[in-house]
Image (cartoon, rainbow over all chains, first blue to last red; front, side, top):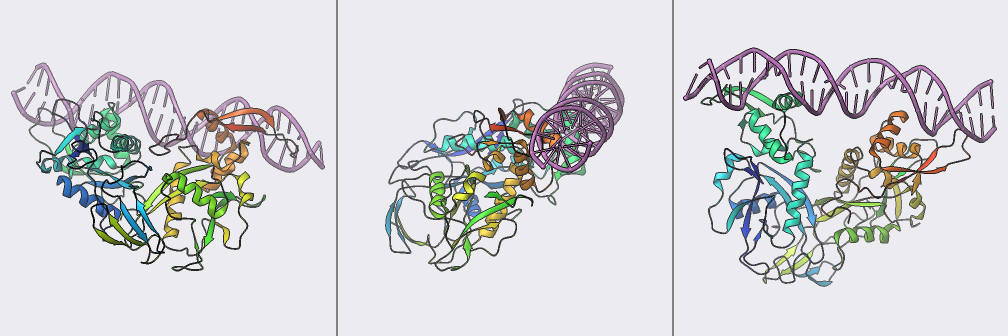
Length: 230
Length: 230
DNA sequence: GCAAAAGTGTTCGAAATACACCCATGG
DNA sequence: CCATGGGTGTATTTCGAACACTTTTGC
């Protein structure tokens, strides 16, 4: 996910989707996905799958959920086949379990999206019908993000290295879907001590030049999963 | 997990573990686990695996995390084998991905634990070295539980249908590992409106008889995963 | 009556909220 | 000078923590 929207309008959450070239659901859009390579961890595989499909490198990546309903992919779809277990039993594997990761894309990275007719950014809260159960997956990702933005530091990952408080507030407002008081927001962020004043300012604005801050990487994100800051 | 401990001592979290009969890690204890049957959802499979291994039926079940580090299970262990994909590619599958579920066992259910020399309850905060990466899994489960008990209603699932406020407080205290003020606890729970006064009282105590409450099932648990109250 | 836990009332201080107001820049 | 958003000060409200106190039972 990334935050997009014109300079004037409110920014909202958008997703880079990929049009399917194969059945089932040929021609429909889907979340970027793929098989789990033998030598990669789940997180590494998620990151490289995203980059291979869209050209994007995430600012933050975390496991969302493992989806594995029995009929979420029709037989014959990618990921189905036949398995011979170590104990000799042979079974058709018609279940696809997707271990879904959620990624945030910094504003500064969006322009690097691979240009291709089958790759398209779409607003997360107004999507067409997607392939498989991907609409449900997006719903859950939005739910988690809205919950988590209040007690973690995910918001920073939507921005580049340096940012103003107004930009950071814009991220919170877009995710939470409501305006925040600039004065109180400033104090809350300051109290959390998660950002550092770089001393620099943005010039060329029609008003008082805002300070530039950067995220304090010394402090870890909250609840990054069992691997901590790995 | 369940809450255990004598009447006098503080209750703590315990786990029902299963001794492994096969290599690797033969003789060591492990979390109950098993393959994913073709016709069951992930959650159904988790519940039935637990029941088959230990005889226990959980009061609450939710997905914890999908663990899939490359070398978390040695080649040849259960879950490894060979896969032939739908597109014809054949690969050895030496990676085991475990979609781990977390369950709470009500006090009233503990006595039904299958009696067997290879099944044993152990205190979650003082475990021996377990098979595979199961110690890490337990650590993460404890972390999640301690986080979640404050904003969800998981605590109720450790108790039977009817319970006193003192019993509910005992659950919170055991999970959080610190004593709570009975007066403030009462008010907080009352404010959440998650419990209903049954009108009944417990008699036979050496003091004023406490009221019995029950959980208000009309209100869903917080964040039960993407399936809501399914 | 006494011990013990149930249950109520009150005070205190921290933190979220609302909003008035000053500051610094471009035009 | 004015418009605009950056940034500060302060009163109000809400909420959790601490703890004194009253109630109801068994012994």
